[in-house]
Structures are given as C-alpha cells and as structure tokens.
Amino acid sequence: MTKDQVLLLLKEKNDYFSGEAMSRKIGVSRAAIHTAVKKLRAEGYEIVSATNRGYRLEKSVDCLTAGEIRSYLKQERKAKIIYYEETDSTNTRLKELAQAGEKEGTVVVANAQNAGRGRLGRNFTSGKDKGIYLSILFRPQNGLNHIPEITAWVSVCVSKAVERVTGQKPGIKWVNDIVMGGKKICGILTEMAMEGESGYIQYLIVGIGINVHYKTSDFPKELQEKASSLDAVLGKTVNRAELAAAVIEELDSMYENWPTKKAEYLEYYRQACVNTNKQVRLLKNKEEKFATALEITDNFGLLVEYEDGTREEVSSGEVSVRGIYGYMD
Image (cartoon, rainbow, N blue to C red; front, side, top):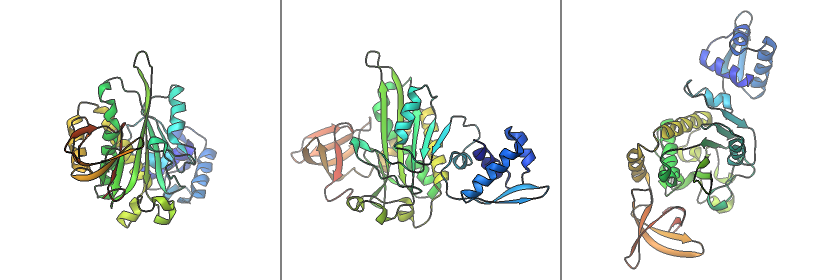
C-alpha cells in the first residue's frame, strides 16, 4: 500500500525526502505520493513540505496500521501484515486467508473487532483505538507432538515483548492470560485445522488481544475487577505499533526455534507463572474442585494437589483455573 510505504520511507529518512525520490523508490507516480501524504495527514500525522526539499515527518500518531508496525520491524521480515480498521475477528479473517493458501508468517491486525473471541467461546472486549488485536499464521511440519504447548510458548513471547517495550515484566496466569497488577491485560487463543486421516496440520493460527489504552470504565462491569490495561497499570502511554512489532518479532523467533529451544521457553514460563504455590479452583464442565497448584510440568501442564492429598496433572484443554477469592489472588 503506497501510504504505508511512504510512511516507512519518511520514518527511515528522519529528514526531508523528495516526492520524486520516493516515487522512484516505490515505483509509483508523484501524484500517488502526494495522495498518500494527504491520507497520512488526515490520520493525524504531522508532515511538513518544502519546495525543492520534499516532505518531512514531524510527528507520528498512535496508529496500528501495517506501515506504522513495519517501521519498528527489521527490514528482513518479508511476510505480509494485513490491516483492518475494524473486522469481526482477526482469527476469522486469517482462517479464510489460510484456507485460500496464504503463506505462513502472515499477520492480520485490527484496530477494533466486533466479534472478538477468547478461550471457550468467551467474548473478548476489542474497542477501537484501545488495544492490539493480532493473529499470526503458522503451518508447522515438525515438532508436532509439542503442538499442545504452543499457547504457553506464545505467552512467553508476549511477556517478553511487553518487557522489551515497557521495561516491566508481566506474569502469566496458566495457561493463556498475561497479567499485570493482579489483572488480565492480554488473552491468547490458538485455533488449528488438521486432516483427520493423516494428522497433517493444514494451519495453526494464534490470536492475541492486548489491552493497551483501556480505562477501567471501558470494560463491562463484570470485568472491571478482572481486566486492566498497560496504560492503567504502568501509568504511562504505551505505543501500540511498537508493541505489536515486538510481539511479531518474538513470535518469529519462537517459530524459528520450534521446538528445539523448549527448555528456554519452559524455564521462562515457570518463572513467570503466577498460579504456582497458590490455592486454585479447577473448573471442568460444571464441576468445581479446590486444589493447590504445585508446579508447571515438563509439558507445560499444571500439577495440582487436591484437598484429600491426591495429585493430578491437568491440561489447559481439560480445565480452567481461577483463584479462590477472585480472578487472581
């Protein structure tokens, strides 16, 4: 998209860049460059122009566009980043693309979702200009016996990205929630399509929703004691595009190292997990049990001890874990 390419050039140059030079570099007309600049200005970017010098970016805005995200990424990342101002669900959009043959590594990102989904079909609040709603496509052909662990690996990726950008390390609530200040700031949803007879994985999509600019009042009342945002917890404004780029880089690195660096991700996860050595409620179907969460097992399961002294390793596909007195004690 010409607009995103122009933005990337202006950010890289950090000085005046002539319309003629940009048109040659991108391969479009001078008129197309002028139109792209007008669109960027309409979005809030401050771009000055000077005769015989060209355009210069004076001030950026907090946009989550493909061009803004790419400005924070390393140049060698070639996979697509597809942006929607609003969509039903980034996972849904990416599933359609995957079925049509889209290459792995493709990212779909949206500024808002009107049908965001979490684990077990729960709704995920996805307000405009408030968060990062991002999905990435994988087509793994090795390490398939480790696939049930991938959500935990992604939790590590998101945690690392948040720490890189904000300087603060979040916790991980087993198995797919990132937490700060005792509240959820991110959820992860993994979906997969597999051929029944051969076991061949057609695609695997990981969806990530991060609360960035939300205020407490932005959440439904039933979530205000459970959910928060990076801005609210940290007391400062976090750049969404910078954080989205960091998440993408961490996901790329994870997939490149899959599954050979399991020990590294497992150790990080164990240190970050906020459930261990805590009293928890295990919810399976309509049954509720109380236990102590002892440790994270070698396959990212949760070893628990029930009140009668018996122990069991539970998986994320079997149960949901909650604190005794609330979302996370």
